[in-house]
Structure formats: structure tokens, C-alpha cells
Length: 28
Image (cartoon, rainbow, N blue to C red; front, top):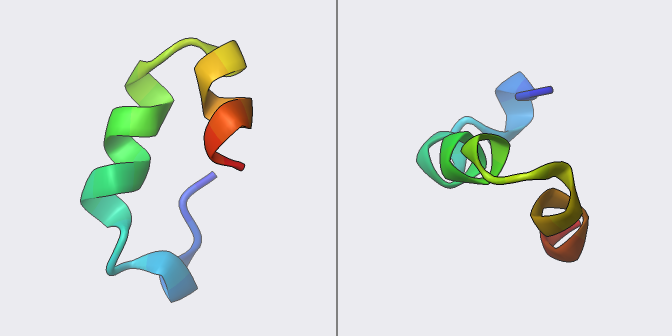
């Protein structure tokens, strides 16, 4: 799910992954 291109947002992406899928879609 974490793309190497988005390494900068690695921390942000990790937090999003911890949240439910519904919340993840909000970010996408």
C-alpha cells in the first residue's frame, strides 16, 4: 500500500492505515 514514491508521507500513510478503511477513503 505504501509506495516508495510517497516515502515522504510514510508517517502520514502509516497513521491512515491504522484508521478504518472508511477513513482511509476520505484521505484518498
